[in-house]
Image 1 (cartoon, helix red, strand yellow):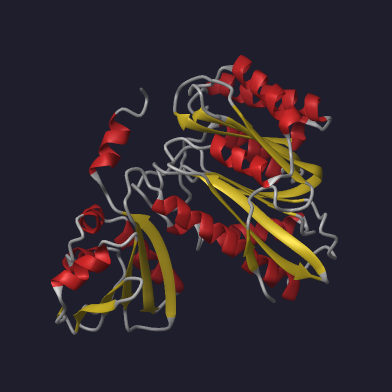
Image 2: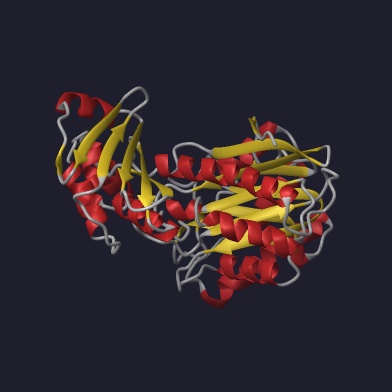
Length: 409
């Protein structure tokens, strides 16, 4: 089954509209509220932060997903996270949903909410209400509307992140599109990310949830910028069935195709987020091959991308392979360092840097050139089995500290 990337985001699938607007919640003269709306009710699935401290929107959305599992709209604000805000924070979620439901003509419990930004500040409910009043009339199914929504959920992101794919099921064209934000406080087990994925595929809610829960393990859970797991991590998947395919109610070829297409969307978004880490100059991709188990492959790959010393070496274009080997060694996975191979790979070159327990014969100049590219790829062949996994991160730069030293101001 051919799955193709197409131009678009959350409005690419049939029946979905979006909008972005300026509400002045924290930022001035920039879009800071977004809405995504489906013409028909959607089955909805979600995964959320593993942090014990959960923001009010996470609690609100989790209850909807685990309850009826049906929603029709999402309202998101950036600038203030609505985290650690007590009873009032939860009440603001309800008020936001109520305001949107009244203007959209849907149920309050069919409105999901999202927030991202500074922890501990109370939202300005009057600004939220005004923002919703601006968003509803602007709702559109155009690419531009989806782009405005993607821009409105940004915080320290340097650019918006959206992607879409198209494929066929039962002779019907099916589309999956998504948008996400996230630049700092990014760490495996979700990240300070908000991600919203829409599809016109007809999929039962239980299978939709199963597809998303399985997918996140090798997509969003394989990225890291700084090792901090956020209070607000939210990934929502909405399916309105408007493509007209026979509803997917059991596993089989149609479900597998849907999962493959979903993974193309989530992985692309995840890589965009990792490469746009705060202050980053390069996407840092680590592929572990030849591991004995899939889980060990994941652990090894994530150990390297989260190593501050390795990330700093990537920023300095320094072929300090010892830091990579060290990160593999403290991951908790047992292996024989005498057997593994380490490689650097660029757009046009692939270079062996470590083999048989010692440094390989390579050119430092050529290695520096590879490490100076926008995407730095490291391959670790563990020579233990047939399992593999890939993780994504970024380099650690001076600007990361500058950005986070005055984030609240």
